[in-house]
Length: 191
Image: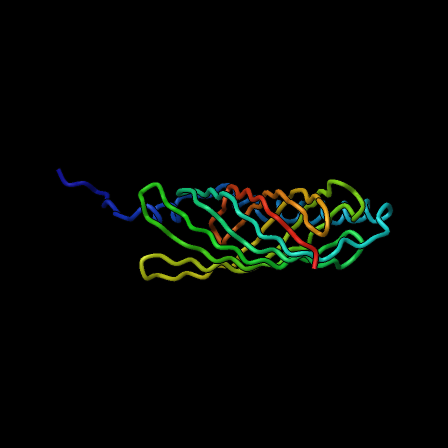
């Protein structure tokens, strides 16, 4: 008996792109809420923070998980003070992922974030941020470029002689692909 429906054969990545993403309905409101939280935190902290956070560079490494697999990340983040509690952080990161089906894929992500951070002088400096940039993915001769949005939160801790440590959680939205999580640890130095 012939079937009225044709079976469409796709690979796992194409199937993941075709699946409905209910969280995409909430992505704009999530970015708006993060921006609002950033403004509120900056306003609240500015009254108690007379000193600027020094500019610094951080080398970060960690893990990354997304819909089709997980992988490792390495990145360079540069922090520039823009206002008493507001930092501008350009960064470049490299993700190496391995999908559940064994396919390996690499991504280079460049972005700029605005981050509100508790000022210098505090031992632990929590921060939240939002940003935008671009992601370039490459695998098996294919190259894809996607716009990227991000939201982050974490802590920075000055140690001594300009050295510091940081821990951060960052979420990326690559056009239609959401990374559920990126957790990095880093070492920074004032310059």
